[in-house]
Length: 431
Ligand SMILES: Cc1cc2nc3c(=O)[nH]c(=O)nc-3n(C[C@H](O)[C@H](O)[C@H](O)COP(=O)(O)OP(=O)(O)OC[C@H]3O[C@@H](n4cnc5c(N)ncnc54)[C@H](O)[C@@H]3O)c2cc1C
Image (cartoon, rainbow, N blue to C red):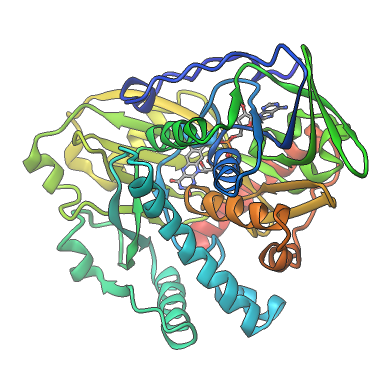
């Protein structure tokens, strides 16, 4: 049995502050639908919502709970663009298509705000985000990204801040500057995910929890999706299983698991802080990531906690490690208590390019969001839904992006991750 299956949400700051309580039964009887979606995170629910808005009948199956995966426990930062700077796509796609995917990355942020408004999702959405440079070399990269976005794509929502400008908003001495973006933002990811599920439910989407998919029977006009108790027969199927794809058999993923190298990431949430302490950390409500490969990311929650996350290769004494990372940035928080700590796998690809597409004409997938999934999952849902409804123009652009495979089984992936993490540490220290 898949090892995540049948589990409940892990305990996090988010699970303790969830504002909607939804329970769905497991799939116990055979069903049919236009589309069956495997995975009830942002990707699966966004796709379901778009399809339901188009009048399709949709069934969503999750092996655990709605929002059990990365979507319900992430840093909640919705960031424009892609993990690699947009300039890196021009060579591969040409200018016109790069412009299209840049515009789509901005649409991803609009989608969040549209849905919050349309479905009245209470998830503490707050705009403002900065990428922080830890050294001059990284600062030069940020300056180049801002210039490309402004000069080539006429983007006017970001600004370069030098050390002094950054210090007016973020009280740490470790950074030499930042790229601030006013369109990006952050939210309570579990409440956003539950809000999407509620919107889906209201539009007639059938959601089943505790229903791990164990096999697929792919025909040309229909696919049979099998759980251990019952089946769904659908014209189209979407794999929205994210970093858990490696847990599935080849019969389900047809080899696309080789594109994903899950990187563990951890977050701690402090106790609620007095407003003067909050202002001594970040005083303008923005969320931030530093520009390391193994990065720190943090923000203030709606109830004034510092949510501080870091990518890592180990989960040994994770809370102590996160606390020490936090104190390197904000030494004055020495006496602040940590109330929560949790982690999960981030769906990285080797070159950080998103991996969306089709395995067969009726079998779709979206994965490899590489740290930009809070925003890009909504876009993935929209363009997969467009393709299912007959217009695959935008999905086809993403299908052109080359995503290298990690060859070998789980052991090789572990070894690749081990080497990769050390390689990234080397880059972070010396480059
Ligand atoms: C600690 C952490 C911090 C992060 N911070 C950020 C951030 O700040 N900003 C950002 O953009 N991204 C962040 N990410 C990444 C982001 O959360 C993900 O890219 C995004 O949530 C992916 O959504 P998803 O729906 O594709 O996957 P998930 O939310 O992981 O959903 C996949 C679902 O599939 C289900 N599933 C898997 N296999 C099966 C099966 N066989 N049968 C049935 N169901 C199955 C799982 O139970 C799960 O619910 C973070 C991730 C982590 C773990």
